Each structure stands twice: as C-alpha cells, then as structure tokens.
Length: 257
Image 1 (cartoon, rainbow, N blue to C red):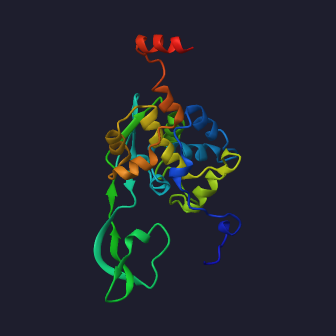
Image 2: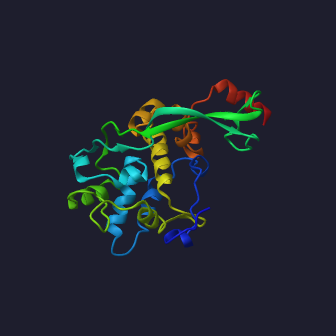
C-alpha cells in the first residue's frame, strides 16, 4: 500500500458500507442538529455544503461541481438543473483475466474454470467516462436546511464551494469538513451517509414509490435504489398503527384472556 501523505497520514480512510450503516431515515430533528455542529469562521459555508449534499442527494464530487447557475429559486421550490452525474461509463473493449486460484471474496462468483488453460478467468472491460447530467429535479423551498442553501446560493457568484485557487473545493477538504461532525459517539459524518439518508427520506417521509425515487435521484438500477432506500423500523411500524381489526377476532381473543 502506498505511503499516506498529508491529511491521510493521521486519518484512516475507510470505505463505508452504506447499506449496513443506514437503517432508515433518522428524522428531520437529527438532520438539523448535525448541521448545528459546524463551528468557526467557515460555518456558513460548511453548513451550506452539508445542506446541499443532503438536499440534492448527490455524490460529494457532484455536489462540489455545483455552481450558482445550476439553481433556480422560486417562492415554492428550488430547482436544480444539469447536475453532473458520476459513475457513468461506456465500454470500449474487453479482455480476460486469468488467475491460478479462485478469489475468496465477493468477486468469486465472476470467475469460471478454463479447462484448457487450467486457470480461473473472468471477463474484464475497458471503459471510459461518459459525461452525463441528472434530469432536472426540485425540492420544496420551505424544507428544513433549504433556507441555509438558498442563502448561500444568493451569496455565490460561480462555484458554490470554492477552493483557495478559485476552483471548487477538493475531495480531501470536503472530507475534512464533514469530519467535524459526529453522527454518534463512534461515527464521524461522511458524505455518502447523507446520500443514503436522502433516499430514505424520499421513501419514508414523502412516501415516494420506488420508481419515483429512482427518477428523482437519477438512478438507473433498481438494485441501487434498494440498497440505499431503507424504510427503517419506525416508518414500517407506523404503517401498522391505528388500524381497525375485525371485531370477531378481538372478541374471540378476549375469551382466551
């Protein structure tokens, strides 16, 4: 593993399994409370970055590219136009990778046995990044955190979150900003947690159907939506409350008590 430099020398980077960390929407109170943890001279910018990441549900790299021109603010809604989409690729070629032993990780299912070569192989692809944009979407202007973002948009003239050289903030700087906040005693805030929270919010609070949520988030694969969109115990239980049960069943049960 290459030697870690600068910020990463003293801070471990750990790839998060969002599907395990997120068990449902934590609620608006918790989301707003986390925003209040940002302190110091840059707290307005940091809270705006936090708000933009949650409200758009975008990947942090997509959020950092946002400019003032991406937004149209009305009295009722905030419209986001031409937000860049990452992780879009097109295939340019393919080749086969051969190994002597079948891996014992999640990629194992991809490897097949080649009798002639007497090795395991899997098909690999050469790709290049596709420049794609998310379909225009919006959220209510009176939604919690929206006022923080709207104020910052009005104060901006190009990139919403500028770096020292006039370009947008770097990934590392954004990561440092989010680490100021703790979700709980053991977990620092990280951008992708907010993306998963937004998906859960869209499903559990607003009641979007899965297909509607996929369109709003700009997702193409149902498997991706299922991984992020957790209803949570509280939401699922609430759907079972305040129901009227058959009188015959209640009366029969009373005979047993």
